[in-house]
Image (cartoon, rainbow, N blue to C red; front, side, top):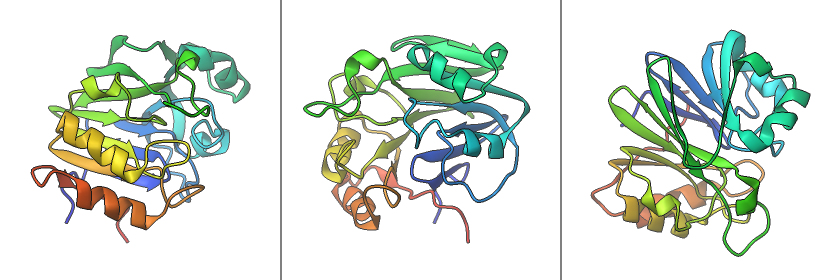
Amino acid sequence: MRIVPEVTVLAHSAIRIRGPKTVYADPFHLTEEPHDADLICITHDHYDHLSPEDIARVAGPGTWFVLPETCRESALKAGLPEERMLLMSPGEHLTWQGIVIEAVPAYNVGKKFHPQEKGWLGYVIEMLGRRYYIAGDTDNNEDVRHVRCHVALLPVGGTYTMTAAEAADLANAIRPGVAVPTHYGDIVGNGGDAETFARLLDPRILCDFAKPEE
């Protein structure tokens, strides 16, 4: 049963939230071309998060883009329009067409894939009366444990991000109403990681796998 039907994890870390605006994060390995994105949030410029061909499948002529300040040049090379880029740094807030966006640091602890000094991001998107935390590629670090949200979308695949157990520990610390596993089943991680994450959650936190409807 879907708990947050407005949220869909399309593949890997590709997320869609449908509300007064349609917001995507890190479109990747998409099979359809709806061209319905009002806003696309890019967490960092690794190929599975800044994918020009997948961005083109959801973007339209009026789509805006939120991305880290440090990814500006990569975004320009990928063909994103500079006049519709909203560049952010960790800790910043902005409001775009009624949607409040908070930039949250996203980085590894004890591994090299996503260094803190890169300034890469997760986002808290506030709309529909809810705060959706899209964590990006991060570990369970001191900064992310300060996030306050209603829905937390957390990577569980390990290797480049948190493991399922570490993601569940983070969810149990920040206590969203709903937790959604991401970053598994493509490149790294599998369905077992998502199941482990769900099993280790505090029973007061609901889990929604947010998969596309068949």
